[in-house]
Image (cartoon, rainbow, N blue to C red; front, side, top):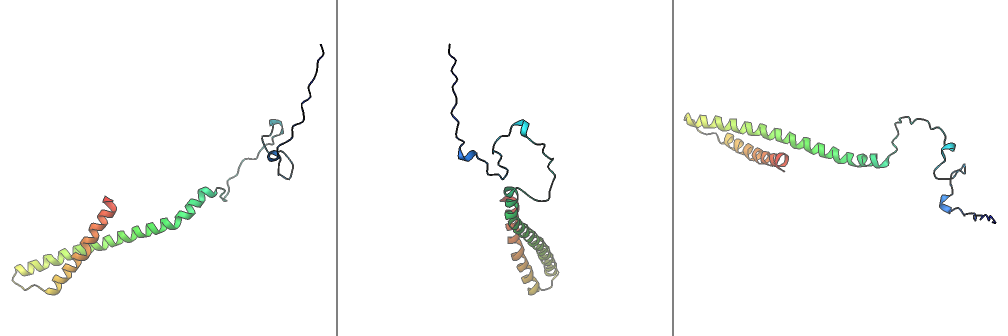
Length: 133
């Protein structure tokens, strides 16, 4: 029996499999015998993930503006509570004066009314914005 050996035709290497590295090594899996010992990765201050840090860098001004607006609305709420307390104190004082027989001072009544008109709507808006919505 004749034993015929078939020679395999040399296969052309596809162009995408060629290495573009300077050392001319093929790009792809390296056999275990040719692998080098890799050094342990040292932590560095440099960021290598543009996706991870890019989002934070883009959102930083937005978050700063949001925190500023939150602090502003909280400060305005504190002022509104103070104005409401002053308006209640002026109202109580003027009611006591009127019950005692003294005339009502129009300046204090106007001031108390203005404080009510300035503080109550803002407090309603603040409570709706922070606790309801």
